[in-house]
Length: 136
Image (cartoon, rainbow, N blue to C red; front, side, top):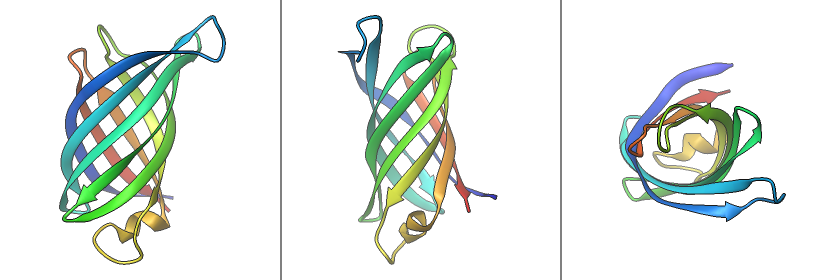
């Protein structure tokens, strides 16, 4: 069941690379993001790297990993999602799911007990906005 919205982060793409695909007919793009905002009402910073490629015409597939930090606590994330290009430059819109590894107590401990789903938007200039919900 879809739970409450647990956070929203904004930031920027801080690095990109083009990587070879597993098939000579396509390439992957790697993006590293740095974002900040709130999760569970606590100020948080997120940094992560994901790769995306066009799996079928018009559909992007991506997977990535990173770390979320809030008030001295950290949680590691791994996720994947699907999306589409959303305009010029690096603009894209992705819907994703993420699983976190978090401590058993503290401000981020709730992340270890749920699947997190979300929306990740990147505009043509590399600005990001990510919103998160619990899936219980």
